Length: 98
Image 1: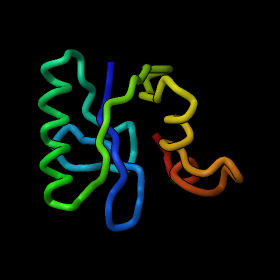
Image 2: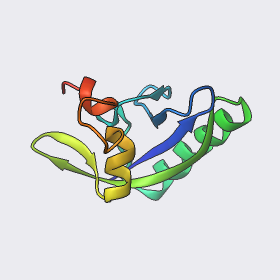
Image 3: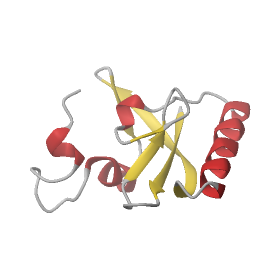
Image 4: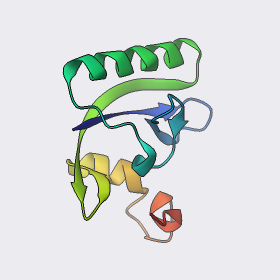
């Protein structure tokens, strides 16, 4: 399983391509991609968002489902998805409820 991630151009926030084609802040709302055709189509949407100056550098990441929740497979992406490692009360990890 994979999702597409990028950074929002206006504020640098880590975002994910959502199920409805918009860019969402929480990985739990990301569109899960199962095969290379879906990934290519999603990256094409990412290229359109780059051209529209909404995001920068979209790319695919591996994700896993743990206890019904979607999370990145790699440590680097876990940090990007949750927020800074300096304090758990900062970033997305402090506001995510699902």
